[in-house]
Length: 506
View 1 (cartoon, rainbow, N blue to C red):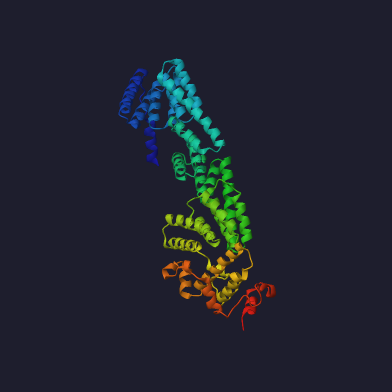
View 2: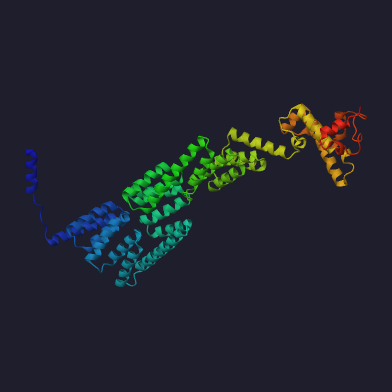
């Protein structure tokens, strides 16, 4: 402690040597010349140090402040440069370069109106100054871009706002306000990495910038990272409690997260009606949140598919892919609904989109299945012709053939019009064709698997339905529609089984 005290006494006893005014001016000029030399070599940090020494020696010299302002501008430190430029013109209002540098700093920081005043003053002092004339035009251009951007933001024409801000930033590269507006519009356009980059650059220089924190949160919010987004919104509100946009975004993010989670919970519990209502409410919170809304539409589509409202499910999934055309889950859900509603062409289209994006074995198999069903759908549906299920037993197939064959046999419709006879004959042939395929295990297997039956050597064009009918009911003398008149339905109704009983000959 004693040693320290002695040291203080010694230091206090040392008085700086005072220089007279002339000597100080000479030394200051020497420092300025050294600063100029470093400035010429683009060593702006050293130039700054020597200009500072010159100012310390002669704090009333306007040119020293002007030179240091120019150096700070080259270092990109426009706010500090503005202070030196303003000091230079306070000391000498006729200092044209000082006014030019003040205007340039104002313009670089985005204050175009103040820049115009500085350039106007420079022109008053030197009306032929080409730099002042050009910079005055630049400042007016920035004001015009700012005005247009403000109107376009209100119209939600975010692309045009970005364009205007890019042009304005060519003259105002240090304007955080322009950068933030550009970043916010990039976020609204879904260009999140670009928006994040702009906001991060500002936060590296100023970690307390509430607007930049808000934009970072906005990007995360729109990328469906809602929990992280809320953290940034809260941080922005700590820096600026009255930040209206951050307040609204924070409220929406919390509401969206809660509503979505409630919907997921209801779905897992099997309460599909409640889940539908919650997802619908969530969709009404913020139409600008594209990614989250895409997921909500897909979730609601899943609910509708569980409720067997397949058309509604398809519509919801379509909304989802319109919002996010890379959303694989929505394509898969919609494709399954298309399969369930036998819209195989649409299903194939969706599965192709999925497989092009993610070439997995699972997606390849789904596409293959859809293509097979599409191929099968374009052939005659023999099950539908006989009116049986695809899992029908052999006896059920026989019974169905008996019923349909008797129903459409040409002899039964001999008294009908030519048009009706032609139609019934066609149906009779199709019934025989269907029975021939479905009653043969080998042919049925090939038919069910989607393989071409012609490969079996069976030409369906040469098919004779009467031969099948005779083989099934017996040859001549074993069956007749004429046993009880031309149309047995007068006696036994239209049920073919009843007709069959009355038509058997003894």
